Structure formats: structure tokens, C-alpha cells
Image 1 (tube, rainbow, N blue to C red):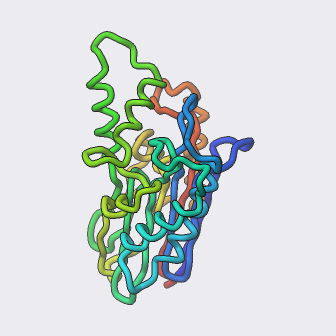
Image 2: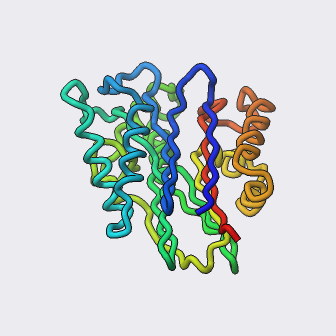
Length: 267
């Protein structure tokens, strides 16, 4: 399968916490959830260490004889065992990641999305199918709602409040140390005959559409088809540099790690 991918760190002097890998018929993309400034993670390894191990394990586990959710649960369980006794996996800020994965079979495309990375499927006879898990948005709104009216919500208070909603029933889920998160992922299948292409994007790349509003999903797919994933990331960086203080497009990070995987049929 003709996959293409590109990734770019938010800052050249910091490690890229995204992960992307492809096999013959599987693609896996992860966006590591960094520990907020001023907080301990409970882990001695770090986010990039975790995303690389979880991503590699998921790629290996996503065999045709099991569901992608089962594969993710096994990968999470195995990755958790790699931490060792020095890591406190019960800490809500322990390294975790969003996950987006696809797998091709002879007649269908299987997909899985956990948290706010994005899958966009270019369908032959209809508008693009866009799959993303936006439960984190509801959690963020709840943190703000519960804050006393009239008092400024500091970044530290916001981050501490949001951590209480991560990987708990009624909150939002990421792939951390609890394999139950795999059962919370959005999963499905699409007949392969109706698929003209697809893109997997971390939120650092999808922000050209869902934060900046400079493209819609159709235009994003067209850009990826004609110019490739690196061109999309370049457009993101141009927009970020044009609004360095977030006045036009308020956002939590001026720049973010950005990663894209694309696929189109060979013919």
C-alpha cells in the first residue's frame, strides 16, 4: 500500500513526541500527551519514550485475526509492563497518547481513533468521513464551568482540573497505562471499494482546518494529494508564524508537533 508520511517537531531543540509508522497494510499515528509544566509525571522515561514503544507494539499487534481495539489493549498492557517499578502508573499525568490507526483487508478499511487525533477518509461517492474523539473538549468546558465565577482560571489550575477527567468514566480517554482505554476508542470499517484515499493527522497538523479554519477537509485532502504531507505541515507553520501570540487563533501552544500519514490507491 502506498503510504506517505511526514512529521515535524514543534521546536528543533525539543524531542518530537509524535509517532508514526506504517506496515504493509497498517498505519499507526500517536500524539504523546506531555506532562504540564510544574507537574510530575510519575514516570522516569518521558513521553517520547512511551509513544515510540506503544506505537511499535500496536503496529505489531494489529494482525488480521483481531480487532484494532484488542490490538491496542494488548499494546497498552505490554507498554505498561515496560515501565518498571520506578514509575507510578497511577499518576494521572503518567505518559499517554492519542491513537489513530487504520488497517486494510481485501475488502474493507478498519479504523480506530482514541482522543483528538483525526482520521479523514476520502470517499468515492460522498463527502469525506472525519473521525475524531472530541470528549476532551467537553472535559475542558467542565473544568471552566466549575471554576468560581469572576476568578481567573490559571493554567496550573486548568491542567490540574483536566487531569481529573483523564481515563475515568465520564471523562476523556487516552492510551496510557490502562488497557480499558482501548474499549473507549471510536472504531469502524468502510468498504474498501468506496475509499479514494485517507489521512491520519495529529492535532498539530489538523489545526489548519479545525483551529485556523484556513481549509476544509475536502481542501485538505486535495492539498495532500497534489503536494504531499510535508506541504500541509509547511502551511501550518506559515499560519502559526503569522499569528505568534494567538490573537487571531487562540490556542494552547504557539507551535505543536505535527504529523501526517496519507494513503491513496496505487492506480
